[in-house]
Image (cartoon, rainbow, N blue to C red; front, side):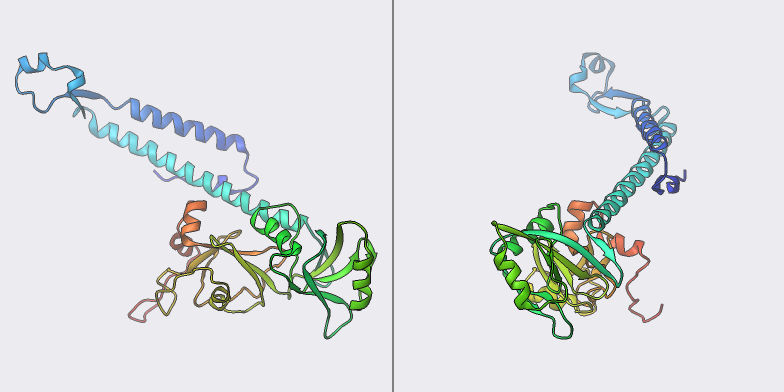
Length: 319
């Protein structure tokens, strides 16, 4: 029996069909289980008198020989159908979750011309960040985020605790403070706006180059995170943070260091691959260890790699 789930994989597929198939699967499995005849036979019973004195409580259930083949085929068919529907359901749920995550990040910014994204963040004072003038153009950007400061704490809420809002990243440009525009101004003017702001918090309007700017990397389950340039070797990024990635080979095919990106489930060989040069840095680049993928997604990194059509090179050198 071949089961096709392409119709279920389409986002626009009606849920009513999916529900009907799920119910049908449950009914088939139930019928298969209850339709298999069983009898109670004690393997130690040898005579009719022993059989008469034997109670069901002392007997072990075994399958009846009569109709075993047809019942087994029926049960296997039902189970195969159930497994097919279950796999289709999991793929559908995972894809919807991934799309929702991407949509949520996109909804938190406004994309404008020039490959830039604009967003607001409200931070408690003191901000815990270091602003500097851009070296090659007018304007002020975020040069450093102090560990343990209010900006860093806000980032951890957004990136690690799924708080609603955008995270701040090194390289972001400050274009307004509490609604007062300061795009293209120098550090002295921007700092004055920050110091003169009232209250215990302020709102910064930031602009990010999402096509060329740096990328925020989050490692799980260690929950280490930092900002890196595109094209940087992932192993070098990990070793500076100490994210506890294991390395057991030289070519990257032992699978010890394999991680999967959280949104698209693309597998990365940490010891050999780089930060993606085309990553949309409106989203963080979240890398899950193989064990984390298994525990949270229910899949194996090896299977994800094979699903992408990527195979390790043969030892004999042939393709």
